Image (tube, helix red, strand yellow):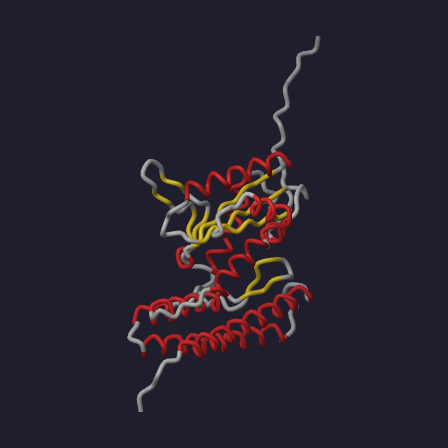
Length: 282
């Protein structure tokens, strides 16, 4: 009896398993914060085992589907899960302090499944894009969790990239957008989603306004590229100068490109201490 592949059923089943893995990861993070390091109850290990079981189930389903469709490279990708420093698959972890848990392995397999569906003309990548947006909107929380006091834009970029590369293994810094007279370089790119990310770091209200003007310039520079079709403009403000609603309204009034998503986050910023000047006594 021949086995048939049903893209819709496959997509739904993968999505449900990935959601279950993320739910387990959330429970895992909450338990870890309820108990001091080294005194976690057996429930924590149990959750890891349950999550691992679901990841393996997800992995087997994708490999089987890929082999059925003759997509050997996709099967190879599904077999190669992201690993931690101990060499074990990253099954559960966190991206923000006691608020967001996720499964890097499940996320990775979601991308592989999306790639499989894309290869046969049945792509559904909304969940992956939603996750990227979710992480970017949590920028301030991630910075806080990492105990970082950013001095400059690159401090914020580095912290976010550190997390993104576990969720999106193909994420890269300063990707290239070639043009005839000049090459532009978004701060972070996720090729699998054709998504590029621009960060702006603002310590004053005036700097936020300048950042918005800079984003409009970026829009013109990146327009027309086929390699990158989704853009995120993330403004990290050191104080509550503006709201997300005000930024969204500004983009709408300016009739900004529809493939750009503005995100405003409120964190903390630390200015470098000015060098003291020596004065001679008169």
